Amino acid sequence: MEIGVLPDPALLYLPLATYQGDMDVVVDAGQSVTMYQLVAASSGTFAATIHAPVSGEVLGVTEIAAERYLTIKNDFCYTEKALTVPDTAAWTSEDFLQYLLYAGIEGSGGARFPTHLKYRVAPSTIKTFIINGAECEPYLSADYILMKTAGAKLMAVLQIIQRMLMPDEIVLAIEQQHKELAVPLAQMAKQFGLDIALKILPNTYPQGGELQLIKSVTGIEIAKGSIPAHHGMIVSNVGTLWAMAGAFLEGKPYTERIITVSGNRSRTLGNYRVKIGTPLGHILRETQHEWNQQAQTVILGGPMMGRAAVSPLQPIHKGVGGLLLLENADPQQMNCIACGYCVDACPQHLMPLEFVRHNQEEDLHQLKAFHLEDCIACGACAYVCPSDVPLMYHIQVGKEKLRQERSDTSV
Image (cartoon, rainbow, N blue to C red; front, side):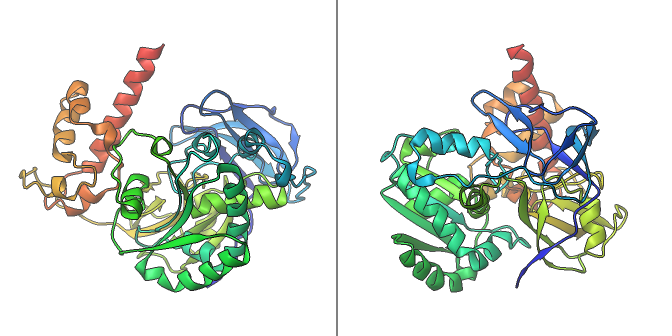
């Protein structure tokens, strides 16, 4: 299995939304930009940056599916901004964090949490640094192929992390289905002078979530909303480490990632290197598919935690690890029968059936009382529901209402 490379699109749409808020565009419409040039940034606690994946012309900001994007017209010249490989050996802790921000590194597993903020800890305060290789959602294999083909780059990054954070131990967590990677990765770690423990996990879902993975690896259960670093732990996704490798070893900001193209409607299965901002319609065409909402649902991400796309212009962002084509189901939605299956399936010990009722009643107080914000949106509740109640819809809408309430309150 190799990583394929797709032709780049004529237009790229760079997401301006961040983990919290939006970035400000720092280039003008009509301006020419070089590859790797900074084009948007935000400041504050959750500061973020994004860079041009290609050279070309800035066309301005456009809205796609209620989100803002900076549009760049590709000139296919690939004129690069001069890159400088950082001298990581001379870094202080602050140099390390500032470079993570400069390079636009953020969580690649879906959450898009700024890596510079996650790693802002005092050296030697982290007991366990966990590499999340538990790619537990069906169809996805981008992290697997990175562990299989880019092990040396991952180890080089871990050397730097070891020096900067000084954790007591580094643990690589992979699932039983990928256990053949254990020996070669352990051997490679030794070549880089790293003492990495390997944790083989059962093939269960949703243990790829940060808190679930911490419990699987350490046996410690951390409450939702707690900061793992305060408990002496940091979890980083394999895809995030790969993005850091491009920055640390080559001086390249985070402008491309590996995604899986798959699904039960997909004719071309595989993993591909694509530019951030590549519209999914372009990827569909280049992999011999089409945009057909009548026959299929296109998911950005995994089948459980991903989001259904509503426009072929929606692009790949830094947290998208998959593009799935799934045959449209015809669920016969019925009323909730209070069977409690969703409660049993919830890894956060929540009551998803209550989210539906109180979202329909617009009762934000009760949504908070039933801890909607502790939901990790894993989709396990919807998967087991015998009545096909649209649990994830109500969870997403309810969370958006709570976010809007916070925003209104802060104004």
